[in-house]
Length: 490
Image (tube, rainbow, N blue to C red; front, side, top):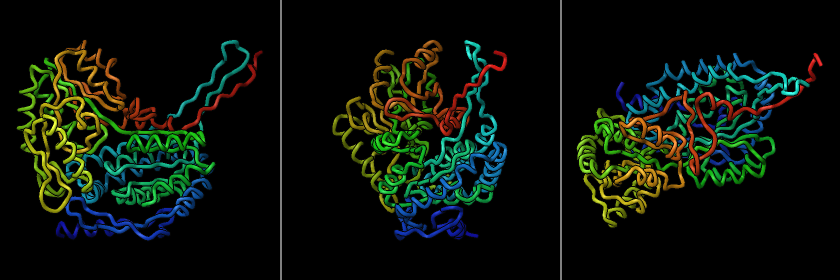
């Protein structure tokens, strides 16, 4: 079978419908075209769900919430473990599907399959480890019982940049905790989620527990679902402005929220850094997923004494990156997700150059079909340029310089965001200081990739609230209850 035939067969296997109450159904508002960003060509047509479709999905989730909450933790665990096994079994199909709809190189898509599947295995294990407390109160007048129950029906909104991992990172803990849900995948990359729902069906998730709505009318759908008194939680991964709007809506119903929002990650390289590690880390932290990640290094803050060498070595490595369709052999930089992203790269790079920055490689749109932008290195960037203030979300590495530790810390913290930071120094005492002084929810010390299902993922400041993954992740889908019983010996 040719590669083109394999792609067609895979795409034809993905349902183009809504998934409501265990059934694949047509949407009320027509269809949505899904395109390959490497070619601009349509690769699938899916249902465009209406507000009424969304409310039917919520009805289905609410109808089975109590029943799903009463299932044993072991049953929920077994379902998640079966889902993990099925995803791993179909790893190549999931990887290719993500590459086709999102653009990332196939090698990276394979990595995402492993990472995304791991949330299913992790939360299959966490499902049976929800512990409470039972003990005498300090006065010995009663016995305190602290227990956990599922928070209830959830609305889960996933982004386009990690189509599998962002779905499993929300769906996994919700299922483990005993919550039902409506899932709203990104319109740009919905196919992976639809394929994943088929896996959940096969794994034994009962009807109504997981419902999926694809739609162009995200705002109207979200308003309707969040205004319903039966909804108890919303989880969102995306931009800070959208997240703030959702939190305002959630406050009206006092909904539990998990918000994983924007980032402006500093990548600080001190004078004592191992430059081999720093350059390797820079390539991983910046160009993984074509730079389209909230955790991507955004501001490279490099000590004056080594900045020239760092820029030279990074430029040499970036020149070796291969741009192309993610399915092609050896490609390391795929297309951006849509043409608007390319226009934004041109704007940010152009404004930086106009303000005095220097392009050492790249800096331009790639001619031809598809949404490609050259992997780029900028030197001489200042902290007040747009490219230092805004989240880049593309393959542009922008270097600014510093001279003292205090200046580096101030630069790193000079943003409303606080998701991820990267620090390269061989000074162990400094490493410990920076853990305390750089204000982010996560930090990589002499390493450029941190993602792990066993770790609590999340930020501070305007990068969000709550944590996904780790032992903490399941708590986001549980409500705590305190009960007091008389002391039987009093």
